[in-house]
Image 1: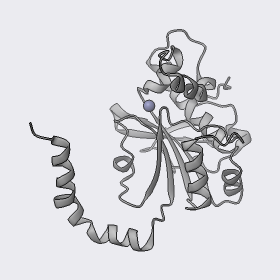
Image 2: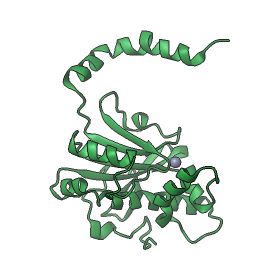
Image 3: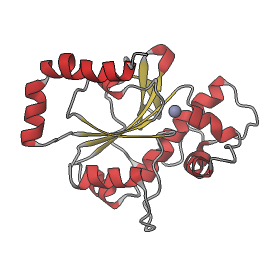
Image 4: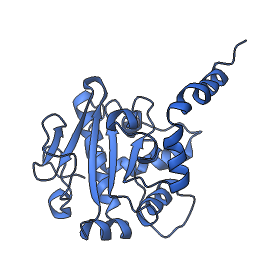
Length: 228
Ligand SMILES: [Zn+2]
């Protein structure tokens, strides 16, 4: 029986790697210097390098269920996403942080139901999106989309509680980007604080939520309805 995965690994070495050999050599010799920390949902349909046109060395990636940002607390546990944010900002000195949610997100939809009893870690993790939930028992597609967008804003607000993130933003050295990727439209919608909503990339003036004014964005969702 053919081992398809092994075939793919071999093809990387014999076909894909040779065309990028010098790039990888450079990245090994000089080290990585990505400018972007990309926090995205683990969903297999979200392909960050495809969306951004980025290649090796350009994105410092963190992915998890829902593209959630845990609180910056002092519990110092095995907080992979929090550790990546600290490393990205303090060591790599990234210039921007993208939080990218997406349409048809199973993590966000799960906020309206019960996590499996055998998945206590998942159930706890979903708490990070609870504040984005709308008071609906059976949300339709539009409500789910709004919840996905509200969840992105919630994570941006939580990012600002990271001391190194807030310091970077306030010093004008770090920009925050709230994105919602609509899979079926092939388009990222960018949250723009000044326009007060998510704007399709083809109509947006810029790719960032910057200037991120915490007072202006705090508690507002895409339609200006207070969160929570
Ligand atoms: Zn998702």
